[in-house]
Length: 367
Image (tube, rainbow, N blue to C red):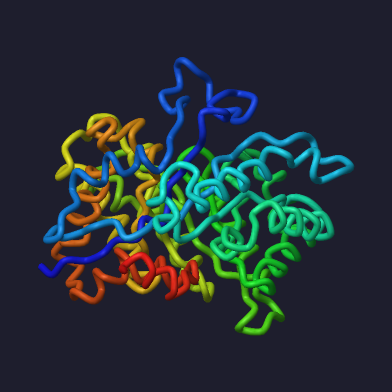
């Protein structure tokens, strides 16, 4: 098999100053294993174990995705209540400008910060202006899209009220008009298939009446966190079961133009009994097969979800390697029949296209 470069389309980073509950509500030290700094130098320590000139896959660059930092109740001055999300952008700027090492500047190909998608469009516009100022020109060129996590809206009525609101739809249209994508974080496992169904409706509404070149690009995270109830042929073949519902919703999402899917984030969803890389790959293959049948290799991309992948991953702190190998095995399944070019799309080209990573950045990384 010919060697491929790899763009990791989904990683998270945070500095020592933000490893606390004041900055991240979900970061509860000492019990939370992620409540310590995670910088690109820590990422390199893992990926370099599998890197060599003749390796099948070497990481070419990464896309940073926001980490759900705390913000105050929206009220008054955006710069005040959204201070921590803006500080996150400042942290990313320090990476791009080499504060933590020269290698970071070339590695960070794309940035997906937080944005107040739940607020009126005038607030989003003000926030984007503040974000651009905080980022500076070089980092702002790497800002490819934004994310506002929707998975925590567990009340169907409140979820619907948000994603089908005129403000939310207008905000999606604004991102598209400005050339930004929107990363979708929703969860069949903990919420229900209704999150997928309602979000799909919002996606189509966001494209209504919009010129093709200004439609917002949607990038779906973590295969929508499937509900793997029982990873067995019986549960998969059950009509109307969780797998059947997920497949229907994923097909509907794929029918929306300019929508991409990430093969990422599955270690947090799988039953704990699955430990070997081979067993995990075999178990998720029906889900991966459906993603590939709906989106194809040109709309499907690899993402590691590092360092979150380490929490329930089979290799603990080296679970980036495990997820890479799981995806390799899943893509090598008998139903895939992927060409070398198809694999190149999944590992590299799809992320570069979806996130509009400039050729100049890719060339600079290679030289």
